[in-house]
Length: 152
Length: 141
Picture 1 (cartoon, chains in turn brown, yellow):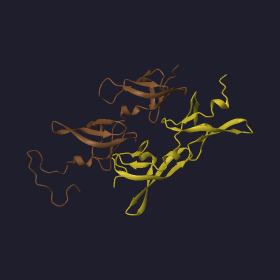
Picture 2 (cartoon, rainbow over the protein chains, first blue to last red):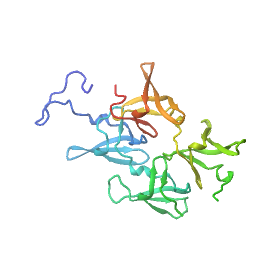
Picture 3 (cartoon, one colour):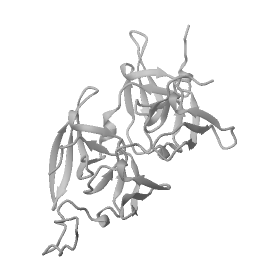
Picture 4 (cartoon, chains in turn blue, yellow):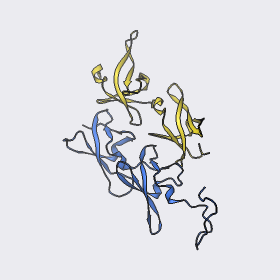
């Protein structure tokens, strides 16, 4: 139940009732899971722009702003996203199609703030030269990344 | 001729089709009568039991990893289950499978000290990752 006893009095030129509204505080502290079911983080804040909901500020391994369009509407016990955030590709192991371990993702190249990556930067170990792998070579990107062709 | 040895298999990481690292290959099982490789045993770690994978579920012996073509559904045990809107349903108590084919899950949830079990068909599962997300309209009380 949204309201305890009596619903609050409404002073609004736009809304006649509060039935289809949600409380922003309902999102705070809720766990966020990607569309694949992977844990992303917890909601730290709800951000507004021009007095309308812009998105959620999530704190996992890093802080992440998620646009409201990437979130499934409504929250019960947790927030489910419509996408797998590309920022979660970091630290994942990368194998090529021949099973050769290429390394770990150290960063993700993006040309915009959308949930799309142009390439991943992979390093085999701390002192190795970073290697750029185009996103078109990625076959599977769930728990680890498997490429669709062998790399020399 | 593409021949590999036991050194090329033992000690390699087993990876399922979702990219999950299952563990390290520690044993090879050979059919003594037919002199053929029957399966491999994967060490899943300190607490978890070893996993036997038959050769029909091995896709490829790679350079640094062994790729499987099936997701071992024993991994699902204990995972949290949510509806498509983020509602918590429960945790996986049992996995219903016929061989390597997942048929469904039995989800346990506690309601006021009472344990309830809900059965969910495999077709009602949308995604299986760190948690399991059900399809729209499933599991919503």
